[in-house]
Length: 79
Picture 1 (tube, one colour):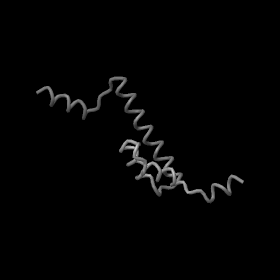
Picture 2 (cartoon, one colour):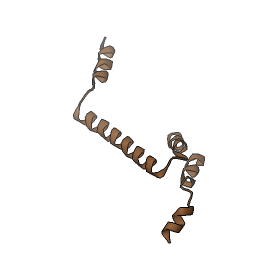
Picture 3 (cartoon, one colour):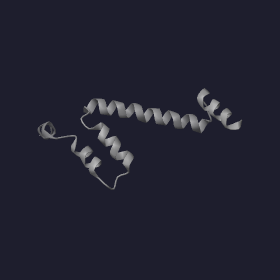
Picture 4 (cartoon, helix red, strand yellow):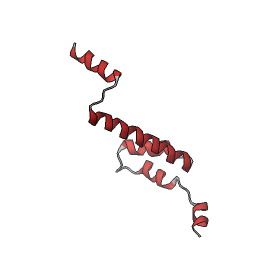
């Protein structure tokens, strides 16, 4: 029964709603627009990768870990 429902369901409908929702922040609407037409598998895996990237960046920031690029930026501001 659920397979029959999902077979005919347009998974882009929630994304279209998000794109057209004037109450959503622009960034969320833009992300929804970029996701339109993506396959469910690729969208899931890409979202996982993005979330992992942000979480790792947050962990590094909380631990005070700096990259070479951020250290160079800091040096430019001190001059």
